[in-house]
Image (cartoon, rainbow, N blue to C red; front, top):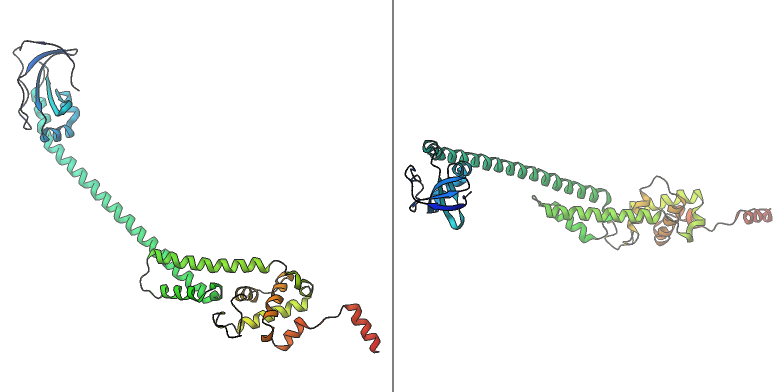
Length: 298
């Protein structure tokens, strides 16, 4: 740090003056008295070489009288007892310090590059796994639940993406979005068919109807080879395909699920075998009325 000048006095012999280094053009030195004692002060405009030296050995140079002052001025505050040989050692050590700093900078740069390469490799692996996961999820959904995709255009889009030999992360994300949309459609159907469809609840309470309804939705599903993508009167329609496939995939139907199966099968009743149609929709007399009818017949 620059020292505070209290007063100036005449030049006194015994000072060696600033060293001739770093291209510094020193002014005529003068003796000043500071709170730390007498000093001989010389100043010079700063140079790039000094700035480099200062960056390498700020503390040591400051200890031996150098100061980097305001407006880019270099000050040399020389003590009468300054050991110039030690100062020279500091100055002579600067090339080695610069070399060590350069080597350290190169080492850090190499570490940075290695770390960047490692992170890049890890990101590539994450992307590869993400993309492969998206491909597999789309293939599995199209293979097992194509009916849940709702629109032929979405299926075509997914198949076009799957056909690409190279897929980027953005397109993989699109595949996952399409798969998620299909899964959402299934979830909606599962929720919808788990709640009672009141107009069919009385009929759905019959275990025989429950079994026939499951057989009926499986029969329609078996013939739904185009997943409702073609209006040909065979299989489910676009409005019934998701619910129909969800119900057909169950092991048994609850009363609520049966009520929805009946709702769907009424729409597609013409496709049902006569046996199933009669089991589902034949007129059923109340038990008491049926008994009375048999008595009258006797």
